[in-house]
Length: 370
Image (tube, rainbow, N blue to C red; front, side, top):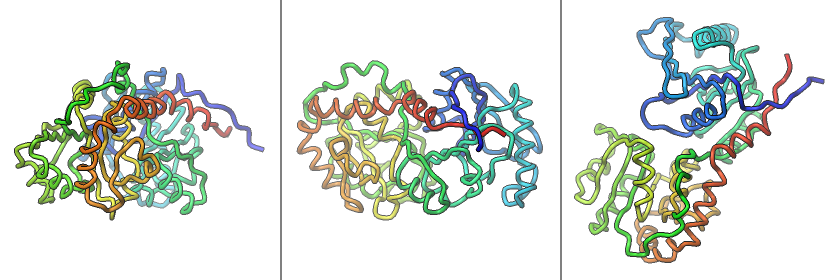
């Protein structure tokens, strides 16, 4: 029988494959990288390849993280037969290891669009699926991983049905910076709400732009702020109309140090996705943990992972318009904003802080001896 041993997530060299760059909006994979580094691990964050670099590898330090960019020199490598594909990625991993300080103990992959199988002999192989829309590629990754994690039940169920591989749904985790100085957040002014905020990626078509526009136009007395990177060429008419509304502002991307106090000052935190057609893709938005950490009232579209937690989030029915739910939240604001309700939201978020997630992943990890 193959021997198995416990893996401690401390003092390890970890290569993290990310579909998003380091610079820009930080998401769960960025926060996880920082939390791993805080535990004494050496984390190398591998961005997507850059054109024009040939066979080059470039490493730079971003705080406690080493960020690596590389050139994708072998055209068609991601669709190549398995032996050639695995040779290509095994070679790439060895070269990155040599450029950053030594062999890796763990390969932590969030991206199914590049490497399609984990190379042998290159460390513990962990596949971490954060989004439903990437599960249809990289089936070889699922079958060659030592451990497969997902951020929600819909992803877990789909992968297990597709591959027969066991998947552990661990949810999202909260960056510790959202919990700093939260001792008094369970209390709040009970005056009428004035400030409504959204924070997150805005350059996407998943949002219910029409629903947001209807809410903003129906409440000219409220101040709506949409924080996050946006694309002025986004082909969504309602997005452009929303930007023209006098009571809606789009300040762009903000640092975490700016964003945390700003969201805490809001009266209502807003989100809205096209739940009639994109329920699985938007089943568990990471931003909801950040919202919950503030204690503030949250209003949004139907969200699969929180469908039974209406005590935490005030949600519209699946596919239903957002405005009636928003109006009801305003009418019930005093009840929804009461100290007990705020404390319940904060407690839920605290229980899902990154250190707790890493403890859980440690308990799931074991490595197979060669």
